[in-house]
Length: 527
Image (cartoon, rainbow, N blue to C red; front, side, top):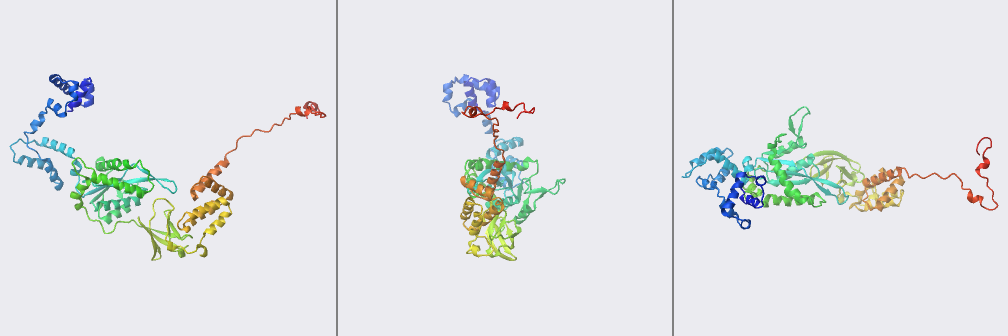
């Protein structure tokens, strides 16, 4: 009982009802405090100078004196026994306690269990006792996202956070991705297993679409997706999804997500991020704080428990990490690049126009001409329209290669539209490390948007006026805005006055003008 809080409220003149509601005590406790104040003659000034020990002496706890008569159950030893022997129960611990040599009294079984539960809650060993070391890894997506701003285009994307955790030690892994699709889901698992340096017996996901699905709408059987199953087979582990509407299956996941939201995302949300590399570097620094610096109630860190009791029980990683593979047949463009997922990869320019086989993994793009590998590129992710170009693939002089575009070819076409179009095309050609990377955007602008010369020239001039970043999409938007403005009806203009003011003319000397009355009455009509 917090007698200090009760005494403080008593000296403030609060009522019984107010004190019991605030502190959570009974009327009897308030009466006991008032009696102690009256008996000891304590004033408000004296209370302000009293220590916690002084107040404790006013209200001695008889339970402490009673507990001294009982033998110590040594619950820390019981916990260690449970960690190393999953079949060890509290009843076995109680039996050993009864058999220990001591002249003091022994607790009964119900009281022994109650005291152990208090010890477990106070020392944060509940999760440790519920899970076996090295057995399971829980995975999920965190709800909150963070914006990532592309410094080139100004577009704002979202960063989705994948989280994995080992429930026994509490070791946490987190990484940001640009989407929550199957490829990102698989790669997140690969990175998480590399982070912990081993493979658990089970991986426990929630029922995300990238993890499970139902065979048919009418069938309630839940099956693991094909790609996710291949990942599990590669690492020789099992996928055991948490059951729907079973909160106990996901209790650890919820605690894990809360820890990441408060200790990782909460620290990073106030900053502006311009790349996923920069964001994930910051995430790794926050994970160091969460796993290795933050000490829990029992005085240990997540990393210390993992290294001491869990790391050795994980299965070893395979020699090669898992890679999901996709094959495509792609045609080489006139700019000697193939395009996959809106990203462009170069091949030797002599292959322009041919259809090649492309092997795509999470990290690499390999291009084959028949059975021969032509080249290999690191896979581009994130902003659309990026180029991966090897300088050896480009011809020395584009204009001397028959059938390929050139700088002068595009500028000559742009001159047909006007000076603003020439300036925009020049900007696009100049901002690429390899000029050929700009050929496809220039072709799209001149061919797709150049149907009406005046409209394209006007849109280019408008984009130059606002110092905009010239792309096919930005020009298309400007053209649509200008067209919509032209389609709006103009302001109403009042009609011209059709009645002549003859007074000024009639007053001129030597001028005679008949007024309208002169023409009335002829033929029954007005003239």
